[in-house]
Amino acid sequence: MSLPHAILTALLEKPSSGLELTRRFDRSIGYFWSATHQQIYRELGKLEAQGHIRALPSEAPTRGQKKSYEVLPAGRDELARWTSSPQDPKPWRDALFVRLRAAAVVGTAGLEDDLRRHLALHQRQLAEYEEIEKRDFGPGRDATQDRLQHLILRAGIDLETSWTQWLTNALEEFERLPGDTGGRAERSGSE
Image 1 (cartoon, rainbow, N blue to C red):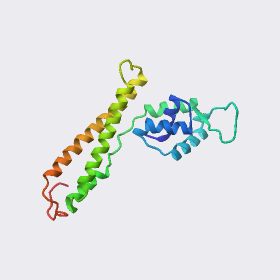
Image 2: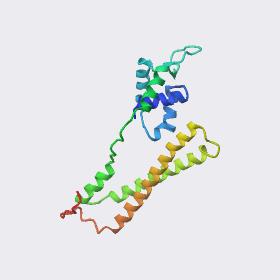
Image 3: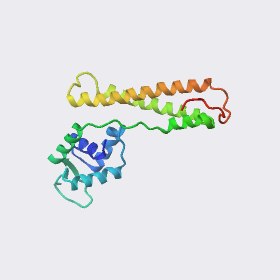
Image 4: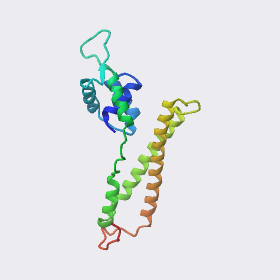
């Protein structure tokens, strides 16, 4: 995914100022594609220079007034091109798994507490997603946009459910581990 395409999507949903866009990002797209406010503002400038968006004319221009942006036909065409282009999945990388692998040779000190912290974080995120689903996707939300947004939310719910299950299993496994010796000299045979 690319940030410019996320911005084009958000602006097609609703023309916005940079500040409004960053706030909307924090409440929606930011759940699965994060960007800093500076990155968003920088991309707005690039998209405007490329002719994909434009600042809406203001009724009474004043110094320091926030600009609102809308997507131009070239921007819509670019987003449609990108949406229809095939993309391969990205390799999954998470330092937690490298840390678990390292713990097999240097010991598990401190890792169990961090697994508990991760579990609490994923449980909170899952609860937030479930609350959004209950609030925003009740009966009668059958428009294409609603159905696709709900599909994305369900992916988040499924992912957080998977994480909470896996972390619960990992913590149960930690309880069955022999006392930590600070590392193992023997090889486990798994590579």
